[in-house]
Structures are given as structure tokens and as C-alpha cells.
Length: 196
Image 1 (cartoon, rainbow, N blue to C red):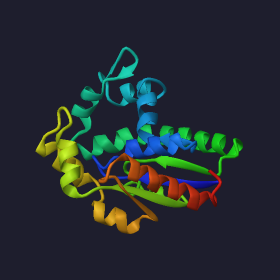
Image 2: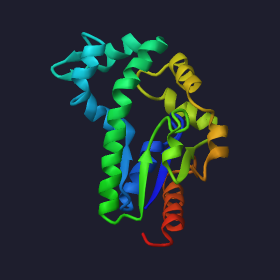
Image 3: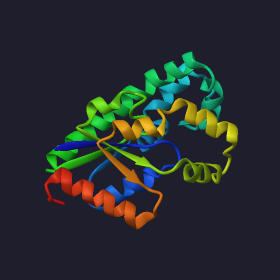
Image 4: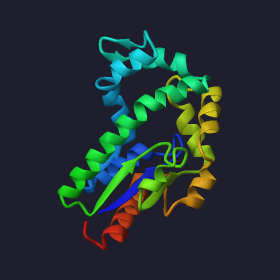
């Protein structure tokens, strides 16, 4: 089974592209969705122990947690030490289930793939990309987003040009959904030898 890492900077269309792989019958594991599940489950008591007052009704209060870790590299490291091993466990279970099902290809949707060295766990990497002007328009159109927040997020991400240079595949999402879908289909065919 081939493991394809899927990544892309904020506003590039990664989640929509992950959905396209799923629509083609490819199993997809979303690191973000995994964190959401863990914040409402196994990770909640561990996070409450590390950051008292950040869990309410058994679910991590993301705003309260963000106010404790943002801008504090040591706190962020402590949080990652709690969450990352749990996400890796879920990812390993997902890959095992995909292998058992006979899937020729599985996708790991990881926002900070290059930033965390996760490409080492993948056979190939696809980067979702669009021109900076389109990215900016998409991101600043989101509720609660500001120029400052956008700049801070970009500052933590490997630049798009570097991601594209390091990737095995680049999916251009600037032309709309159908062209992106065709690119996804071509990648699936190439990686599975046409067995899709």
C-alpha cells in the first residue's frame, strides 16, 4: 500500500482536496479531525492536567487552550507532547485498517507535514497550492481572520514555494473544483497503476 502525504498552507484548499480523494474511494486520515476527536475524548483529561481550566464538560475549550499556549513556545511543546503521540496512534490504526482492507493507496492529510517531519512516514507527498493572491482572498474571507493572524500562521508554515519544490505532486486549486478533481484522479491512477 502506498502512503500519500497531503499537505498545503492555509487557504490552499487542502480539506476540499482530501474530500476528493475520499470521493474516489481512497481512505483518508485527517490529522485535524483526529485532534478534534481527541479533544473531546482521550486527550481531554491529559490536557486538563497539563493546563488546568482548559476543559469544560469533558471537552477541550479551544479558545481557553489557545490563550495558554499561543506565543509560549514551552507551553506549545508541552501540548504537542500530549497530543502528537495520540494522533500518531490513531494514524497507525487507520493505516493498519487500510492495509487489511486491501487499499492500494491511503492518504494522510497533515497540515504541518514538512514542519513536523511527517513526510518521513509517507511514500509520496502531494502539495495543494494556489497563487498567493487567491490564498490571501480565501483566508481573509474567513470569520475571525485578520491580517495579523494570517501573517502569524504563515510565519509558522514552510513557504508554499518550498513545499512545491519538495513535493512529488502539486495540485493547483486555483482553477476550480473540476480541474483539481482531474489532478487528483491522475495522481490516484499513477500511484495505483490505474487500479482505482
